[in-house]
Image 1 (cartoon, helix red, strand yellow):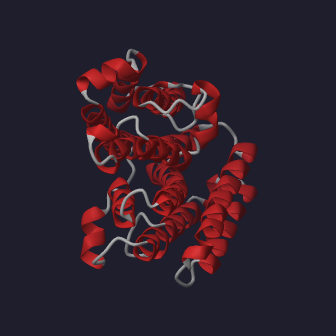
Image 2 (cartoon, rainbow, N blue to C red):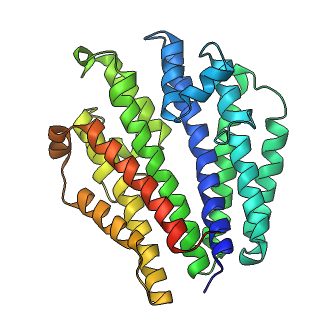
Length: 313
């Protein structure tokens, strides 16, 4: 059986790699929204910080929401544990702790990403260079993932890493959806307007779903379609359904490997049941905000339960 400390390192290494990419995608979405000038740029940038779950901390450090302050906070600020630089540093530290559980290619890709980001983010990023920097962050994390998937044995090491990736990704998708519906849109009268459609487009881009959404819905930007795609579509790699199917699969492999089921398995089964037995219309009847708030709370509970059940200490 894998040591709890090793399982913890693998789990958090992958959560932080996923978080680094998610922060880059959030800033990318904010940049696209701010450039449209359909509303005050400060409102768009504040929604990005809210989506990152960091509004209170940001306000303690900065007086206003601008391209410069938000990109500095979410990309470079080492005192923000969710910034790209802090996340990739934490991923590398966890990877070094479990170095013997990783293939050489995986470790080297993490180390190379860390060095590349240290160079890129050594000084404040000029707004004109933001697209290039954000693209580089996304490429570096994709290279880590490619090395990991191509070379790692599919054993319990792989499973704990997968669980970390998809718990983090599910949290990110749920937060982005929730913020779009309740923060970005000025009022219900905007629903279905050009502004509404453009914001949905930007959010889809932030979760790498813009083109694939178009394939499924032919570019029809409706709230129910987008909720269906990002919550219920099991083929969309950042949907809640996709994330929880993968978490369930990895936990089931661990149960078979160790011959024991834990309470965390029941949480996943319950959450997956709420996803599978649902429709976008039912979710909106209950309330999208209420559904997502409940999901985020249960996802956090799952992370805590996994840490306890598999002795991450």
